[in-house]
Image (cartoon, rainbow, N blue to C red; front, top):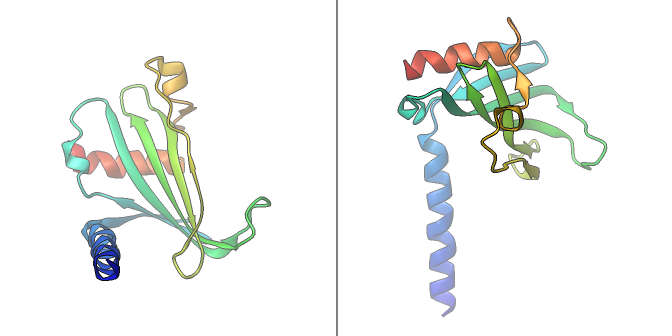
Length: 141
């Protein structure tokens, strides 16, 4: 029984590591204190108006959030972007420490077809999200 549990732990750990190796991160912006990358793995499958993307913010100076005890070195954010409406929502945020351990994660997914609720924020011209959308569109169109 112990061998089976050990095998399952090693096997599931290798699957998680393998999934991370399949990610294809490309640079989007370097803002000085933050570097933003976009995961392009599978992004070409989105053919409609909605695009789901993961971004990675690497913080040169640790991000400090009052309710989280650790310093945050990286933030992965999962966005739902509607290219026609030029609006987006945050679906999930994962915060990492300097050793790539998950410090805290939040899920904001909700089931609504009302575009006022489904896409919470406008995409402003020349904003970070505008640059993320532009880069994502080069892989979907």
